Structures are given as C-alpha cells and as structure tokens.
Length: 407
Image (cartoon, rainbow, N blue to C red; front, side):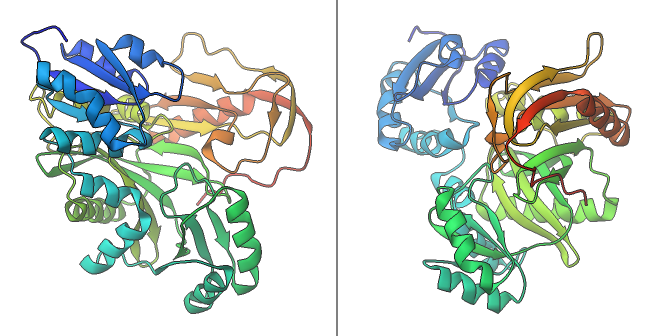
C-alpha cells in the first residue's frame, strides 16, 4: 500500500457502495472479497483488494495484517451478513475500535439474543431450542397457539414458517429441513403490524433515524416497505425506546442498525436485529425521506469526518418500495411503464424464459418498484399504482399461494 496522510479503511465483502462513499470522503480502501467467488465490482473500485475465505475469521485477519503493518488501518467495516463476523474478528485481532465480536455474534444468533432479552427483562417472547418434531409439538402445547419455527442464525426469511399447533409439528419440521433449515428455534407467534427501526450509533449513543412500515407474505418474506411509519406517535416512541434499550443491552458501539419489531397488543417486541443497514433498498428510502445517507455516515462518523446524528431527522416527504411477486410459472412476456422524467425506479430480476417459483425467501422475488411522494401515503399510492402497471405474464405452473398481508 502506498503511503499517504489520509485514513485507510478495510471493507469485508459487499457491493461498491461503501467503497464509493469512502472515495468521495478521501478515504482509501482495502477490500476483502470471497476467495470462492468471482472477483466482484467492489474489488475493482477499491484502492487495494485481497481474496480470503470469508468463513474463516483467521484468514481474513491474515489477509489484512500485511496492509495494517505497512500503514495502520483505521477501521474494518462490513454491511453484509457474511462480512459482519469476520470484520469484527479482524478488527479485534488488529486492535482496532468498532463493534465487538461478542456483540455481532449476539445479533446473528437468535437463541443467544432471546436469552439476553430474557435476562434483561426486555421484550418478553417465549422461545425454545429444538432437536425434534416432538419438542416442537410440546412447545406448541405450552404456548397454546401458533409458533414460528426458524433457524437460529438464518436470514432472508429462509426456512421460516408458522406452525399452527401440535398436529402440524411433523409437517412443519419436514418443511424446515427441506428448505435447508438448521439449528432450529421456535418462538411464540406475535400478532400485529411489523415495522423496522433504522438506527445509527456513535461511541455507544444510539439515534433512531427512521421507522418503516412493512408488508409481509404468509411465508414471512417482506414484499413492501413504506417510510415514515403511519403508526401512532406514542406507539412509535415506545418501539424506539425499546430499540435503544436493546442496542444498549447487546453493546452496539458504532454504525448502522436495522431492528425488526412486531407491535403486539402487549407492546412492541423485538424480532431480530442486525448491525448493518436494512436490505431491500431501505437506505434509499431513508435518503429520499430524510435526506440522510447512511452509507456515508458508516464511513465518515467513526473516522471523525462527519458528525453523527443526535436526534431523529424530520421527514421531508415519503418513500415506498413494493416487490413484484407474480404467480409461479415460466415468464412469457414483460411490459413496464415509462418512468422517464420522474423519480420512480423499476428493477426486474427475471426475464422472458425464466421460471418463477413460490416466494419462500427474499431471493425469490421478481423485482421491485420504488417511488417517493409528498408523504408516506402518497408514496405508497404511487408505488402500488406503478407496480400494478408492471406486467409479468407467465404460463402458470400453479395457483399463487402467497400474497401480501396488510395489517
């Protein structure tokens, strides 16, 4: 690495956004990408790039150590699920500030997270680790209602399913294992609207940046986000306060966070949380609604290049995204409306001839429509109207089984 006076940042995995933000701020970058995959665009955009086994924290540390010896790194960051653990481990190994490996592990292990919440008396949710369908049936009887079966370390709604009662336990267990689920955990089903709380932390102080309303399929895949949330202010304040208490409990020190919350009749309950920006273009919804660039803050704040937010920003409008979920089958024809001259975005992840299956995880969605508006209601109306104009015609293989649930 060439010498220079500016800070140097290591980035583990991900798309070019962090690299691009660093370049704008005059920060040089070392990008660590997966050795078992093609060299990504982010590696080309970085000042330096190195391949490593991202599933081996020691390998990532070994890859970064020579750079750190030549010119000390300021931080090791990541905004992707796969990169968060090795980034925290490498930062600890190099003696750099940041979120601890203990904190990141807590956030990625739903079993440990539930245990911590129970110990602190926060967000009570009954849960149990499982080893058999019989244990699942016993938990259903104990709860006396539906439960959710999920992997302790899962993401993207993969292998997550509802179990209506003891009689459904065997079938639910088979669905879980068929979907690739491992290390199963069951939690009581939480009824009510789902939101996500987008936060940013600096030196252990947490600021709530935005709260997002969500639309979710029966398969628990998210298919819509609207910002700002339309829930009553008192409800949102309670959810925000719970999130701050939770982030304190897990020891989050710096950077963005994305915490998913159910608003139940007994108050808000934490579903899960991540020390990264929320997926599904939530960073773009935040930018359009509040004028806040979470990616730039992720780079700039810990390096002292920009001040961290200290209060929730005031919305200057609204923004919404709706994901496209055509019925299963083979795509025969696609037609999209003209969006020239406006701020709307239409992105398709399928083409003519592709086969579409049931929506069982986030990657099964066919694309999205994103818009803004004068407020959240206007943005949602515009987004849904535009989504209706996107025609993805298929030779149907089966009747669709999943459609958005609107609370």
